[in-house]
Image 1 (cartoon, one colour):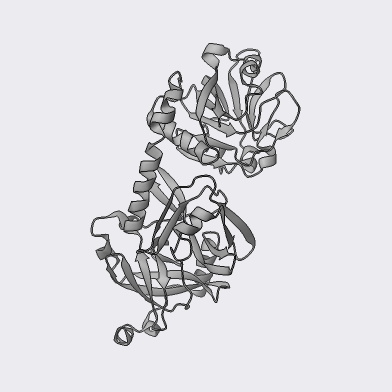
Image 2 (image 1 turned 180 degrees about the vertical axis):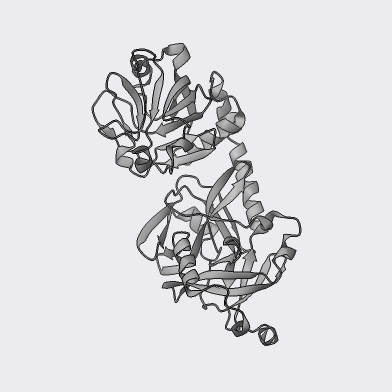
Length: 410
């Protein structure tokens, strides 16, 4: 190994990034990596990453198997982390049946997560190309590590070679680099995960291609299991007509609560489209799923565990979310105390993310034409993790083609 170190001298590498560039990388990534703690203290690094799958992304945390293994996942309800330059403590919940993958040989663990205030790093697209390892020969790259488990730092280097799932990466590393991400300097996308540092100025990393593909296979097999159980519950729906749409929304609910079945409570074209009709069929029914299809064929809606009632109050719901089936996006609540309004005044109903000024996503009776909706661009994005309310619906004011509400039996 000393010979290798003599052949490729770290001190002879060109400085690929200025000091300002170095600080910019750290600022961009500070909410994408975390420190993982167990009962006996700091254990290593976790990486937040988005995995492309079909027409959506799966958000995950990736770390080493020697940090979080199958035994830990089986016997613990959460993972304790600190991120954002040691400013934010969080827990990753394991009690909502996340899809997990862990492999001792690769020294990799991948856990599906639903955190919404995190910056997810993208995977490098070349990972999925045939013979992808040949594309990374001698490319400039870097790792992000915590010096002595404290301050984040960037170590630049070069990939020497990839052999099977092993990456040899020449760079200066700390001795404790467990879980550190290895990224392509040209696009800041992730290639691998460090599992061993060295005094000889190289790190050994796991090439993520095989672990990611194996995780996707587990994800695919588990999500397919929901098809025979729940698609039949939408047999009378005029909105959910494809199994893939059923799978998308049911999986999102399963990440929050267990489901036994879905009962159709209300269908506007069958039961009437006024607020009175809605309340008659939907109040006091427990957790509900609301589906909307506009006359422009946007399909979206919301989920809440709160009862819809006639009692004046906000509904506190940390599991509430909005969703776009058209865009295959989930928007989790970030102010659970304002997730919904559990009651509706005479003309308004199905109120998500509302304030006292009725700003949010809600529906109302119009004296000229019922079946109206409002998608408020100002306040809705403060209450749900929704960067732009047009990701939910392309119109601020919209007309309904259909509206359906399902009771979630848990």
